[in-house]
Picture 1 (cartoon, rainbow, N blue to C red):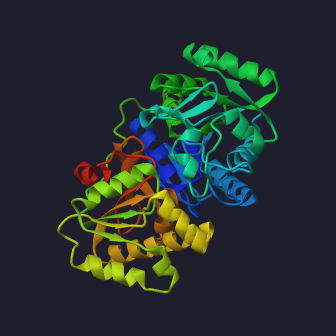
Picture 2: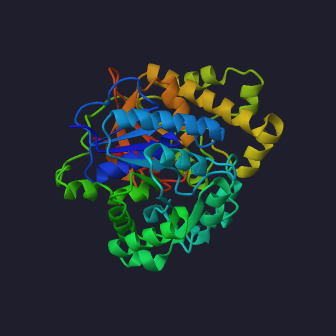
Length: 421
């Protein structure tokens, strides 16, 4: 049977986050890196195509997303989801608005929603404002993001600046009224001329109700939380079995390593916690820029330490240190250089016998997956909300956890190994 749900994610860890959510709610899911050239694996209910478009030029993001949509349509998918970060990472020029509108045009949709809420990770939307924990988005650590600083918490304003269609709001009162009331709010927003509506949500029950109300929308957009309510729509139509064990993975043996490129507050705490108890090698971007063979140095350092527990290779740094490097090298050059370096180190570690690998940071995960030439992942059960273990497709399988920078408890890098099959 063909896949039911086709998703397009704007970064690699976000794709894994979404895929894990679908598995948790009973859909056998694979994640593909980039637009595949072959048919999807058999016996899957959902396919997530992971792109690296969050910070790409808007025209490039639109082109890649439309290519992914065409492939997912050819794979037989019945409904489509555009997934972005639960912190709505973007700039005033895109890419959430331009991609969403291009996908709407392609599927013939005159209305869709935008809901990045993910209460399990502290993301809630109220009156159209996005909260991270107890503070507004604009007062959180995301205001210092090196590539997409978020300084406006009002998502209606943020998305309107990126969109040609009018952006409306489905308020909290409508959401708490349940599925039927949410559908009425959709029609009210559409009748008022809105093509996209931000939807308030502050609990998993809210997201389940919103997902049910989206049953007939050809395209849904949001964070991974919005996906928790979609599988039941297929189940109610007899297209998806109840109580399906969707997250079974084979056991993978080998050395263990963490590659950390994210500089988010959560990853800063995770790296600091791991450094207290495990060997760690820090990447200095200025040494890389000077021509030092940091990849060889990291491999030499790791060679005597692999096998006695997980090792950490990291470029994670405090905002002030990141700014100094960006001032010297430029933000884009510094980011790309660190990603390439970490990806090359990951490849060397795999050649040295690492088969269990955690990668922190969406851009870093994309670079690692590309360098390792991974075709895709079969998704297993979650470690923490938004972060599952996975096993790569292909002849040399790896156990991988691709972690969004903002996700995971402070001890994530330490406890994750105990959650492997």
